[in-house]
Amino acid sequence: MVDDVAGRWRRLASELWRFFAVAQLATWVSVVLFNVLLHGWLVGDALLEDQAMLAYVLANSVGMVISYHGSRGWVFRHRPPRQADGGFTTYVVINLAAMVLPLGCLYVSRHLLGWDSPLADNLSANVVGLVLAFGARFYLSRRFVFRLPEEHVSHDGDEVRASL
Image 1 (cartoon, rainbow, N blue to C red):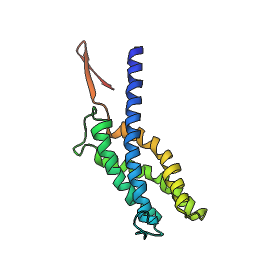
Image 2: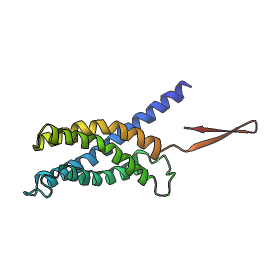
Image 3: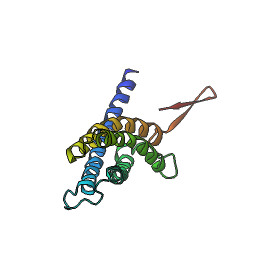
Image 4: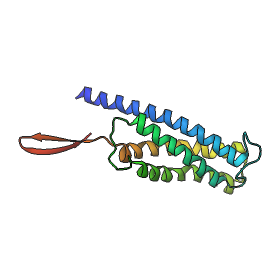
């Protein structure tokens, strides 16, 4: 029993670490794209100047695709897909719901506090907002997209369904 609990904690820690690594890659891609679109980093003129919310959604949509493929192929590869699309639709819905947190932080920073510098935008959306959203995405992804398969165990002719 103790070994079972220890094994579950090790598996959870491993999944959390890999999820964090994939999230870091996706986040860096999103941060660079967000700043290119909104502040003109690396390109000079901003493509979506004064459209912070749209820039954030577009940049993080690219990051979401990267994150899904990293999660499906590396983090949760031992959890077979249960949906025909491999859970992609559910993953997108979860990520869009979690995106409300950093978008809310960005909105407060820009529209209520009047802070629209690159530093303020990145601190509000890409630090505070993403920290809040990370936990929600990990839990919801693990629970609804990358679930462990169910076991069917028979005891004395009775079927017992146990979810791992």
